[in-house]
Amino acid sequence: MSSLFPALADRPGEHSETGVSPDQVQGRVALRFGERSLSYGELAGAAGAVAARVRGARRVAVWATPELETAVAVTGVLLAGVAAVPLNPKSGEKELAHVLADSTPDLVLTAPGTELPPVFGASERLDVDASATGTAPDTPVSDGDPALVVYTSGTTGPPKGAVLPRRALATTLDALADAWQWTSRDVLVHGLPLFHVHGLVLGVLGPLRRGGAVRHLGRFSTEGVARELNTGATMLFGVPTMYHRIAEALPDDPELAEALGRARLLVSGSAALPVHDHERIAAATGRRVVERYGMTETLMNTAVRADGEARAGTVGVPLPGVELRLVEEDGTEIAALDGESVGEIQVRGANLFTEYLNRPDATAAAFTADGWFRTGDMAVREADGYVRIVGRKATDLIKSGGYKIGAGEIENALLEHPGVREAAVTGEPDPDLGERIVAWIVPADPEQPPSAEELAGHVARRLAPHKRPRVVRYRDSLPRNDMGKIMKRALTDA
Image (cartoon, rainbow, N blue to C red; front, top):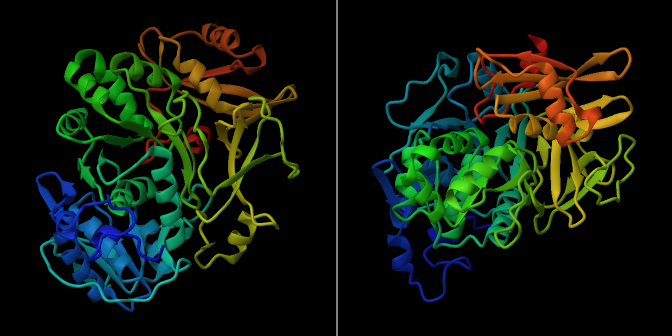
């Protein structure tokens, strides 16, 4: 497991197909960003040069722009057995200052010509040369060594650096290969940012571990998706915002529909994909989007399998090697697989992070005494073990009239109304109910928004009367982060 990238070695590892020579592997395209690409042989040289330069460092920051150099930099740092700290180029100076002070990187890797913010001061910098040739040093590593330090979103305080060991990357990527029948023949296309685990670990390191290829769009567009899927790409990774744009474009874009219908696998993650977008894409393309569930601290926990049922609104079953349970607030395990009993997801397995950097207090608080990680996500489980997430414990679990209600299913119901373009659901204090359900709506037609009574009746008919919104607030747009997740604290704090 210590070799994360068998295809970059002189001899193909266990993940290469039988009968494929080393020379054939080295000649294959590994990375393509726009018009620029690197074969496995070229990547081995460029990443080897980085590895030789950073060998012996403790941590190395990577200015994670959506460019070829970012992928080369992270690959090289990992080949050297060093921990990479991907930095969000859109972060403000205060957040960057915190991350740099907390992680204390020995140097920062960038694409040539990059202008770094003043907060970097006199930090040592290395421009990554994608055309360089070098050999990665033979550095002894163990599965527990840090591979990445990825900073959380910081919604409840300064971002925390989740330390992900090498075994977590290997475990997650191999489990996804099992679930999705992911091989070296697959070509992945996406336009995800490279400072999150979705775009970086799954979207770049995943194809490299398999010996396949990744085509990064630089910036997501439906035209780019159609072009790549029509010219050999087999898999698409995206977030709900991207799939929503795809669903909106499909009625007027037969080429896009044909391209998606050609894909082997369409995967959505980082937030729940609304059911109505699932159905619109399936109706237009004949292909169903599958979802998976993970976090920075856990990488991937569950996935809808390629040979399983692509059931809208669910994130599939636990991946190989992942233990998953639902618990009550007092820690009592919920045994029922009834699709109704809501509990917090807790997970255990080799996919987990080891600690929050410099935060032993936060690390201890994140785990139970017997080693289960408290995700803070609320879910139910169906009779066949499928997991359906209903929201975050802090923002999406609403206790109203004696019921525990997940915001996610109400949002899906609201999005099925033709007068609703976007929807978010929160709770607010109510003297009678404890909490009342509040719907935040972006209407399809701002001049004629659906009434609160109409929306309440719509939800009550689809779900249950106690799940109807008691208050409706209309907005021109909903605040979202880089991954397309609605920032509910920004709504309720406004």
